[in-house]
Length: 522
Image 1 (cartoon, rainbow, N blue to C red):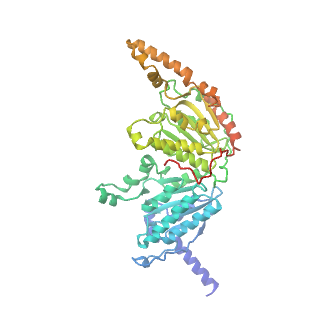
Image 2 (cartoon, rainbow, N blue to C red; image 1 turned 45 degrees about the vertical axis):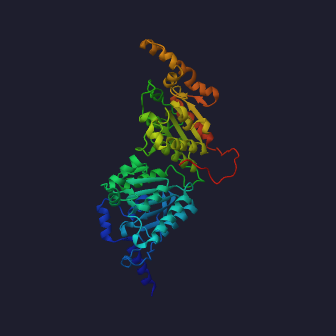
Image 3 (tube, helix red, strand yellow; image 1 turned 90 degrees about the horizontal axis):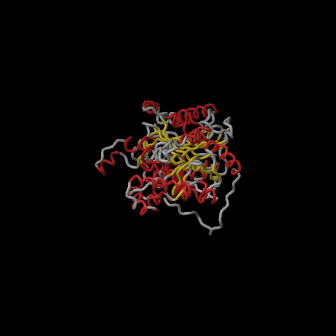
């Protein structure tokens, strides 16, 4: 066979591979408002940077109709390319071939890509669009999932792993995204669940559709599975690009630096009057964050779940930082089960990838009540204590207003290893709120005053004394628990100066017996 004939065969094979499950299946994908696997890769990566691997892989399963199904690539497109000039590895399931179902060879392609990403030290991106395990391949399909899960765990904390849910993701397919660092879902066209509507109806008699059971809105607001939600495929892929702009390629690198024209010493006088005079009145902590960090750089993660806490990425003087804050606009900023999980996991991610943590504190305590206690708020709250204590990256803390009880300790206090702690003059640091403390400490004296008006005056007087003597930030400053009391307008410059010095921080640990790892409460 001559050279020209061989070249024709190669060209033909490539054209066949590019069609995936065929033109009809591609047209159907487009009608459903979805891009194909290759279109998604082309949009996500820098133009012309994609190199595909294992284009010609096919399944080897026979029986149950598999001998009639043939497709180059076996339902997944894998390879490497660049985003913003930085190397990334990618696996994009191709729903046009057998619904993107995972079989032995598809899994081998994905695992091979993950191993290479890990050895190179580059982010792994997985675009999920699959009906789940390929039933016709039996245990080989299950083995494939196990191999992927194992690589997810081996890669955790070493390279960033980002999953996009861009179509069905069901059964065992949901656990690889769950083991990754971030999950971005696409509205309307994506869903995730372990058991689908038919199984739910058969087992429980409950009628539910795919979106109600596991759509993007459900996972973004209720389950806490979806970190971010895109309006369509392109928006989902844009969110991945933005996310990567804050994150280093691996755990040995520093986060990306981006030049800014926002002055380091910019003072913001409006911050001095942003907090309400009434300490019980809410305000939006996001406004504080956006005024302190580089303009336009705050990128919130999990914006619609566990909203009493705010987390996200930002930049300060061009340096990427992680932001954790209490949100007084929601449940007064109290820590509950979900917000504890939200904070703890994010802190551990930031620490894994050398991203400094800035914590804005206004917390009245952990959420009380039987629902929280019976749901395990003790166990979940302990995750925050563990995460901050374990973190060795620069930790900077701003106490804005309330910092009461165990929640004060949990929110990156000096006692958990914070490197630089400042308080605003409005800060109240105490075991509990002044009103509650006075009611306990002076309950007999208060009960002894018969006149309601006199009783009110007495309570106000004692409460004010408590604030001035015990809840003031100067008490904590006198003990060395906070480093400075600053005006809100000075916060940006103070944090930047500290961050600049702390950027060369090295891990210093008290000697402990050798151990494999700590046992975090989960």
